Image 1 (cartoon, rainbow, N blue to C red):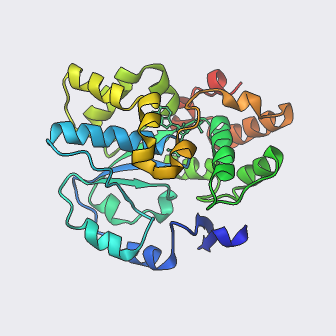
Image 2 (spheres, rainbow, N blue to C red):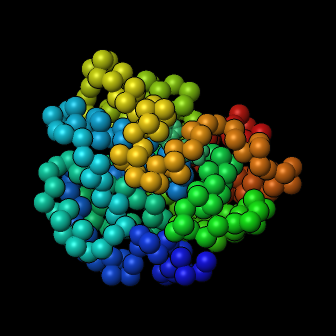
Length: 279
Ligand code: A3P
């Protein structure tokens, strides 16, 4: 299982997608002022947000929908070179910890949307993902995954470290945070917030169109086209609260304590509405 993972500067990455050449090439990554960046911890709804931005950009810029998102850290330097020719606005995505994001993203004041999901559902989604993909280590038990999750021995590091670091550098000018849970509870309002933040201005009707094209069921239905045979692994349940089917009382308390320690008193932590979704 170990050889499925790569360690680069103390962080684990999936070897199937990441390599040292790419990480070195990223040191000179050239962001554009009008790039749009989605930053997420894994399993926080990245593919959902990617689809939303593609739908919005295609409506506003009269563009065909191509899921040509550039994952900052995935692939090889040749892909990065090809991405230089893409028309603006380019849609970028990353799971990188704030400290590893190429600096030109910040120098060019690229707008960054941080999508945040509660840690308990994130863990359950991540566990299932590991066991459904050949390219990540599988786990015989939920308990063994839970240990690695809380210790940060998973790709892209520990959930709490990821958010605590982004939180520390959060600014309201170029960054916006939105939660998976608020998107589930009031989708039209969430879509309006996203479109306004990126200045992808849409009519009410267009917002409704984006909503229907990016619903869980509609994305699951077309997942074979968008994600090939991995489709089922990316669109599993799409629910809030599945953690209750996995967590023991002790595990639940352990995550509560981590939340208290790292996030409870922060802006991102408060947005999570932790008591409502995690207790
Ligand atoms: P579950 O495993 O809990 O179902 P990512 O894209 O970052 O890998 O996140 C995957 C999670 O987002 C999965 O969670 C997936 O089902 C959920 N998801 C994907 N598309 C969604 C949508 N349109 N609406 C709600 N949840 C969605």
